Every structure is written in structure tokens, then in C-alpha cells.
Image 1 (cartoon, rainbow, N blue to C red):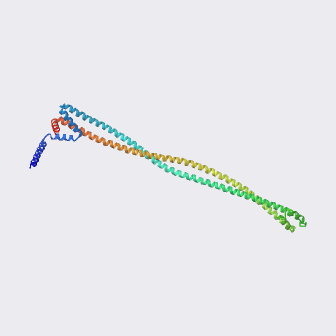
Image 2: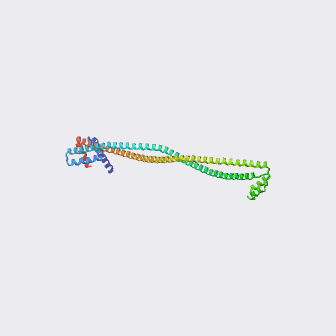
Length: 356
């Protein structure tokens, strides 16, 4: 029962205070001052003002303090605005430079990529050309070796043919001379005796034995045949010698042609090799150019991204600081206005605040 009575009493007191505060004309000022209490600067200022009022400091000193504080904040804001403007210029300038670097590096990559494609094709063509000329030189060398071997074999065959043919002609000459010495009406014994001295295996002796039985007409016919064979062989030998001479001339001409072709191909191959080396070096330079441009693009892109992040951070901090500073300036102005118009209300509020 006692608890109920106590609760009713408390409620009655609260209601009376609420009614009193609601009808109090200073409520608007108190509400403003209470709102200032929620801000760090507002609370500090009210603490300072309360202390100075307790110390009976002149109101002009308090007003001067507030004015200096407000002007300092305004000056700080102006400096912040100037710094922010300069930061924006710096950001714009540096980002512009980064964009120029990015554009240049991108153009370098595009151009070097095109050059790499062109040079790669040239290098492949020149490498194939060098290989083709090497193959052609190998073919020429093989032809030279084949022709030289063939010429040597043909020359050897000719010498053999020449020696054999000369031996046959000489043999026919001997036979012709011996047969010409036969007289059909003469005794053959003396001639056979002479031939027998040559050797029992001498075919001429056998021929003489047979020819000794020929009539004069038969012998003349044999002699004519031998003369024709000898002439034919001599003509064949003559033709063979002419052919051998022509074959040697043709061989030497072919060797000159092959040497000329070899020199031309060798010179062309050396030229292609020089071009190949030059293009390979140019290709390496373009690859290095692209690699450097890629590194530059990555570096510039990273730098730009970092700078943009840094600039965004500055803008965010500037906005936060500006808002905070404007709030502080607003609080100071409100306090200045209240002190100028409602000093009594402020004193009452501070007294209640200190006794609370």
C-alpha cells in the first residue's frame, strides 16, 4: 500500500515538472542548449562559459573568445578549401599524366604487336629461303660430284677404248704387212719359218698358214677387208677422240655453270642470312618494346588506380571535415546569438546543469 502511494507521489511530481517545463518560455533555449551538449565542441564551450561566468569574467571576453574560435574555424575552412582545390588540380594533373602514359603504352603495345606479326612472318620466310638455298647448293654439289665421277669414268673408258683400238689397228697393220708378203706361186716355207719364230701360240701364224692356201684373188680380197677394217677402226678412234674432246669441253662448261650458280646461290643465301639476322634482331627489339610497354601500362594503370583512391580519400575526408567544421561554426553562432539575446536563460540553464 505504501509503495503505491509513493509511486503516485512520484508520478505527480514528474507531471508537475513536465507541465511546468512545457509551459516554460525558456524551453526553446534549453532545447537548443541541450542539443549542443550532444556535440563535443558544444559541451566544451558550455563548460568554458559556465566556468567564466562563475569566475565573473566579462561577457565581452566570452564573446571575443567565441568570435576568435569562429574566425579560426572559418580560416581553417578557407585553408581547407584552398588545399582541396589544389588537391583537385594535382589529382587532375597526375591522373591526366597517368592517362597519357596509359594511352602511349597502349599505342606502343598495338604498334609493336603489329610489327611482331610482320617481322615473325618475314623471319619465317627468310629462314625458309635460307634453307631452300642450302638445299639448292647441296643439289649443285651433288650434281658436280656426279658429273665429275661420270667424266672420270668416261675418260677412263675412252683411254681403254683408245688403247684397245690402237692395238687392234697395229695388229691389223702387222697382219696386212705379213699377208701382203705372201706370193701364191712362192714357197711358203720361208715365211712360215719366220712366223714360227714369233711363237707357236701366235694367231698370226695360224692366219698365215690359212692364208697360204688362198688364191691371189682371195688374198687380195682379204687384204682389202683388212684395209677397210683398219680404216673403220681409225675413223672410230678419230670420232671417239673428237667425242672425248667435246665431252671434256661440255664437262668444263658445266663446271663453269655450276660454279657460277654456286656463287650466285651462295651470295643470295648470305644476303638472306643477313636479312634474317637483321629481322631477328628487329623482332627481339619489338618484343622488348612490347614487354616494356606492357610493364609501363601496368605501372601507369596501378598508379592511376592508387591516385584515384587517394583523391577519393581526400575528397571524403574534406567532406567530413567540412561538415564537422560547419557544425562547429553553426554551434558557435547559435551560442553567440543566445548569449547576445538570452543571456539570462543561459545562466539559468548552466545553473541547473551544474546542479544536476
